[in-house]
Amino acid sequence: MLLDFETTKNKFNTKIFENSRYDLIRKMSESPERYTGNFRSTLPKDKLIQNISQSQEINFGDAMELLIEDIFCLYEYTSLEKRYTIRNGDVLSYDQLFSLNNRIIFIEQKVRDDHDSTKKKGQVDNFKQKLDHLIDLGYSKESISSYMYFIDDAFKKNKNYYNNKLIELSNEGFNCKVVYGEELFKKENILDGWSNGVVAFLKQWRENLPGTPELNFDLSPEATFNELKNLKVGQLIKLLKNNEIINNYFPLIFPNKTTLEFLLEDCKKLILDDQTSRREKKKQEELKLLLESAIVSYWVASRRSLEISLSLNSIATVNPKLLRM
Figure 1 (cartoon, rainbow, N blue to C red):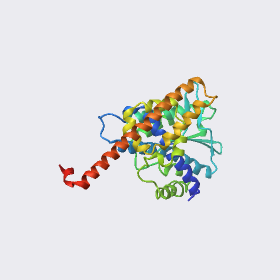
Figure 2: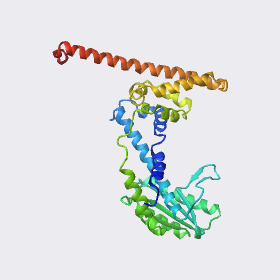
Figure 3: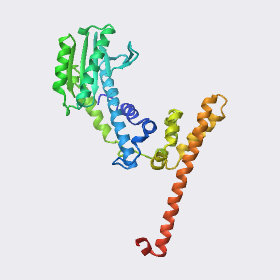
Figure 4: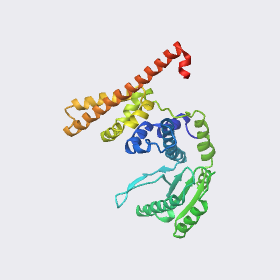
């Protein structure tokens, strides 16, 4: 393998799995209606697993950018600045941007070529915008090698469309290619980059992948607290005002309430802190009441469930036939 496995694995896992708790709570606070109501086919537990798994799939694409960047840098490519604020104030982000021997290598990278008709057009427009920006930065068309790159070569849904569009850009003087899987590394003469880099790492990494995402955030309450305290107070307040979220989802993700208690203690400290502004204290006081209410509410619910369970056990002990009546 070209890369040190442990170092690369740590970077990869951090990108994919870190902040997953923060992402979930943020999404729940921003769009609670996507998790509640009768018009859905999934139970709360299944909805949480689906949400976390989808988030990790998206993060996998970001992790692959790190992996391919590291491989290119092994072959003396220099990674360039990737984020730019353009004239209208928007931020333009390159997936990969390198220099090598007076060449600029720009790679628009995606995991799969499976976009629908709307997204594939946006993909080309975005690619063209970045090429034009490189010209604005002072690079000549002749010095730029650009690739629309799809990692998984099993998916080539829009290959003909992308080829035709990039031929149009080539007619304007740009050097553009659509490439899949190993083709990128062959074009750049990085012959071991695919088999001994990308494929070798992913094969070993997948051997110890976790299974179903862990839903109990209280298993590591300090780590969860450190992620969640980055949320805006207003987001937490909005979430805690939704009783359906508290009743159906909190018992799954905060079954021991330890994380909520950490948040509550932090809230109390901020209220007592002289450095906290009056406006912020008012928000923290509202948050404090909501956290206390949430902790008590499903403590009572769980206690009632336990009492019912104990009562049923008692009835079964006295007369098992009563349970079947």
